[in-house]
Structure formats: structure tokens, C-alpha cells
Length: 253
Image 1: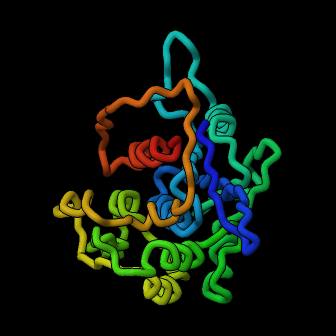
Image 2: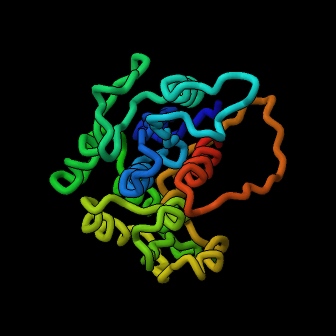
């Protein structure tokens, strides 16, 4: 698995090595609102790019069959995801009942436990939030005028309920909207309108996506046995399972 750490300087000049809490978002794949909720929470949390989204199945999908072997049960699928990603905290999104989840000893909370306090005191119920990251980003990267014209991409998504656009560029919980706008004053921004028709125009360039901002300061270390290579991931952006796979491949590092 990947290791994610960050170095922060103390007033004494010494450095601290920190890592963010690792969350795993639990969603029913066909619950579009829950999938969006998971993406938005991950965009708001420091290190959220590397937080997996775990599908909770009531029945094993047909394409999980590997004949002649019997298909895994929904409980075994959940167990495998948790074992592989090894999260600190599980987050139940949408209509999932935390009491019915086999947690394997992990703490489990609801999505509301994370977002409920944002509109009140500006910080999530668990973890470090995007405003704190933006403030640090502003101090370190935007203190002076940049020659490379780097900007934080703060787009308006023309389809705000499109999970693909949210997964590519990041989105934020509704509770954080006003606070997020205030914190954007710390950085230089670019605010285009992005749709499914033009999003490739913004996929590269001197921009930091919101999902990249939430990983600021982190150093990702892959196992030494991992070989770097290029691959194409072909998927149906309208299929929630494919979108979850897209997110999780990135979460692996």
C-alpha cells in the first residue's frame, strides 16, 4: 500500500512528520447522492484523494464471478476492501445503517458526523479540512506573484450532480460553500464553467484541482516493488461501479 506523510516546520525549526487520517467511504453503488456525498467529503478532507470509496452490495454482482470458483459474498467483498485499503475510520454515506456494517474493529461514523460541524465552526468533525489546507497553501505558494501562473481551479460545474465531474475536479459539501469562498482569498484562482463537453480543456495546465489541493504537503511513497508504467483505464462514466473503480485506482497512489 501507499504511505502518505507530510513535513511541517515547528517554530523551533524542527520538523514533524504527520499523516492524515485515512477514511473509507461506504456507499450503495446505485445511490447517486451517496456517491456524490463521498466524493465531496473526500475533496474537503486533507488527504482525501487517497480515501477509498467502498461499494456496499446487497447481492454479489454477476461480473464478480470467477468460474469455476464460487463468487465472493457481499460481506467478503467488504472485508477485502477494508483489508486492502486499511482505513482508520469507516464513513457510512447515504442510507447505509452503520449498525449493520461489519467494521473489523474500525471506528464507523456517519457522513453527517464529519460535515455537521463545518457550517458552525468551520472544521470537520474528523480530520483536517480544506480551509486549513488552503491557508497553508496560500502562505507557502502564493505569498509572492508566481511566474508560472499557477492557480487553484475553482470551477462552476454546469452539472453539479454529475459524479464524473466531481471525481475529476473535486467538489465540496454544501455546508462548506461560504467558508470555501472565503478561503479562496488566500490563493490565486481560475473560475471557468466546466461541463461534460469541455472538461478536457482543463484537464492539464497550470491548475491545482480541488482534489489536488486536499493532498497539499503530502509525499506519496509507493512500495519498492511497484513498477511505474502507463495504462489506459476504459470505463463507462455513467456506471457508478466504474466511477468507484476510477476513484479507487487513484486512491491506491
